[in-house]
Length: 73
Image (cartoon, rainbow, N blue to C red; front, side, top):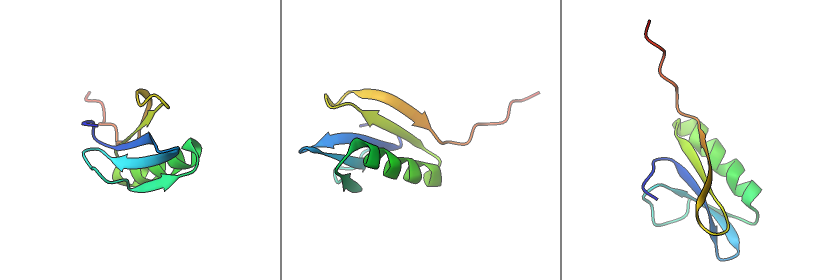
């Protein structure tokens, strides 16, 4: 988990939200949908990204809540 942002990962039959680089879960949820909701709220507040992992642990989706730079011109 080297990418910045929040990761939604499977964990012992539940779903965890972990900050990139952290060994401890920020929160643990019964469903992936609940974990995605929690991770999205954190990412919006911190202006980062959410990485959603599938049951196999591989990233299957990414959503960015970072501020986009204004185009020059």
